[in-house]
Every structure is written in C-alpha cells, then in structure tokens.
Amino acid sequence: MNSSLFDYNIHLADNALILAQRNAEWCAHGPILEQDIAITNISLDLIGQARNFYQYAASLKADGSDEDTLAYLRDVREYKNCLLVEQPNGDWGQTILRQFFFSSYQFLLYEQLQQSKDEQLAAIAAKALKEVTYHVRWSSEWVIRLGDGTKESHDRMLKAINEIWTYTGELFITAGYEEAAVKEGYAVDMTSLKNKWEERIKEIFTEATLPFPATTFQQSGGKTGTHSEHMGFILADLQFMQRAYPGCEW
Amino acid sequence: MSYKIRKYYYGDIPEENAGSSDFKSSQVPPSGGGGGWPLWEIFIRSKQGLDHKHVGSLHATDAAMAVENARDVYTRRQEGISIWVVESKYIHASNPDEAEELYEPANDKIYRHPTFYDLPDEVGHM
Image (cartoon, rainbow over the protein chains, first blue to last red):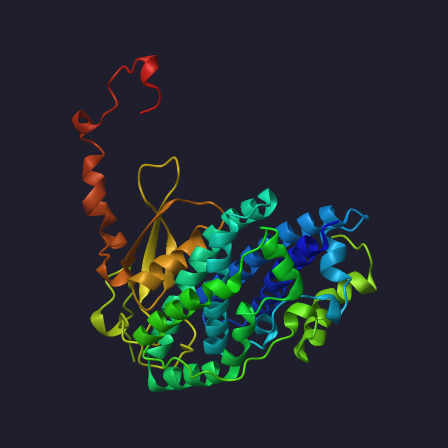
C-alpha cells in the first residue's frame, strides 16, 4: 500500500470530519433558524467529503477496514487533521472566521487537486469544489457583515482573529507524508498557495474593515497527530456510540 | 373596552412593522426575527417548471442573504434551480373578505369560460 497516499487521504478526511463535528455542535443552537440550517448544511457537505476520502483510504488499506472503522475507531494521535478545525466554536463570529479561513484553504486545495495524478482524488476534489465554493461565499459575506457591522460585532471579530489566527499557519506547513505525496504527483503543495490564500483573506478583511494580523507564532502538530486538548473531547462525542455499541444500526 | 384587531394578509405590512435592513440590534434577534430582520417571501422554480412557485418565507438582513438562506432552507431536497426573493412588505394581496364581490360575478358569465373547445388528443392536457 502506498502509505503516503493513504496518510494524505486520512489527513483530508480528518480535516473534513472534525470540522463537520464542530459545526454540528450548532445544531438547534444557531442564532437564527436559517443560519442554523446553513451551518448544519455545511456540516453535511463536509461529512460527504470525509466519507469519500475514508472510503478511498479504506480501499487502499484493503485489510477489512471501512469508512466507519476509520472514522470511529482510531485514537487521538492517529488523526491527522490540522489544529484549526478542532478549535472551539466560540461565538458565531469565531465559527464564521474559522469557516472562512478553512474554506478559503479548501477551495485552493481542491482547485489544484483536480489535477492530481490520482484519479480518485481528482474526482473527489471536483465534486467537493462545488460545495466549498458556496462555503467560501457564505462565510466571506458573513465576515464582511460582522466585521463592518455594529461595534459589538466588530469587537467580537477582532477577538476571534486573536483566538484562531495562530492556527492558520499550519495549513501551509507540509507534513512528511504530504511532501512524499506531492513528489509523487498526488497531492497539492500548499506552501505554493499560501500567498493566494493571504491575498483572499486580505481582500475580504479590507471590505470588513478588519486588520490583517501581524506575523505571529504559528501552532502546528495536528497533521502529525499532536493535537490540542480539545481533540479528546471531540472524539469522545464522535466515537462514544460506536465504541459502546459496536456495529450498532438504526 | 373594545380593540380593533387588524389582520395582515400576505404583505400589506405597514412600514413601522416591516423591519429595516439596518442591522441595528445585537446579533441575536428576538424570536420571530422581528428585531430588525425583514421578512422575505421565497419563490422557487423547479427543474421541469416554467414558473416560480411560492414556497414559504424567511428572515434575512438583505437580498443577498435572503437568496443564500433560501438556497439553504428551500433547495436542500432538490426542490428547484432558481430562486426569487421579494420583501414581504412589497407584496400586496386581495382581502379575503372581498372574495364575494371580486370573484363570484365571473361564475355565471359562461361565454367567458374556456370550456367549449374540443381539444384534439395530440394537444394533451391544457
């Protein structure tokens, strides 16, 4: 089995799954009905992407694993999602900002991934790109509305930037398996897309009257299994049913 | 004491009650979204359809958000491929109490009714 291709799939799948899990925490708690539905729709889109990547990874592993065993039966250190997606939801502004940062990154990633040497990855990327295009649009407009909104919404956005900016750098630091996968032509070299991403952020921030943050220390480690303290709790929620009642069905 | 109860039919919502597009209040509007988020009526055209049908209403701060909310709420199950949004205050409706004088006079003027044609089978349902 091509282990860097497998790890790369798991990385993309975990990113989607953990953010989906975080967004789903808003279900029935959204600020207004339509936004509750919007954020949970995004959650479902992400779960769809995660399923595609997990199914492909399971077929690569070819040892009886399936999407469910990969999603529900690994422990914290085997997850390869970036740190950004496991951060707490905070208030609506922080959730929006996290979505904006992440979806802008996913957009650039999937756009390039369509040219991957691996046909499966390219196909998944093409389908996911349509969903992510909407996520980018939705979150960008909210960043503008909240940033250029009332004094309170503006202050909350500033606070959110302070909270999560330090986790955005990791998106553009390649992990070992990523480097190998890039060399083989399967993966996207995110370091080359960092400038484009920053341009997009600057563009929206300017319209939202938000300051582009100064360079600060960037956290990393999620991609290689070193997660923040939140990860254990997220997995407890996510995996409890499957671990307590293995193989349960509706 | 007697109160005059004014019912609002679809639209005809006076300016004071319509809400505005300025997002004045805090991020969480009071229930019903009356705290500054206007109500919009949503019309969706299905893939096979020719006309946009009214499917419901929702709250949004402006037209762009209304279209996105309609996409999220009313097209989840492939209901349609085109969305029209109109602020509810711009919809004016006939008064149901006046139904008698508006619509019944047409009942007995059979020379206006399109029911005397012989339709060939090829035309199908008209």
